[in-house]
Image (cartoon, rainbow, N blue to C red; front, side):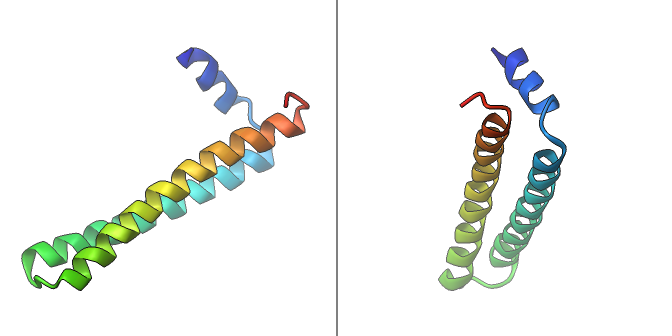
Length: 83
């Protein structure tokens, strides 16, 4: 099962792979920003506003990452007429 998933990711279309790579990089940067905000909240300011911004950005980055992967799988399947 895992081997099939890895093979699917390895055989993506070039454009789909590029879009997914840049999308996941964007999500990673967003995640790093949220961790920095949460670290700042933990070390210096104890404002609930900063905490909620950090948690919301973290959730958003995870949601975007999942959407990029799922949409990449669907788009690649449609291009290859598998769906």
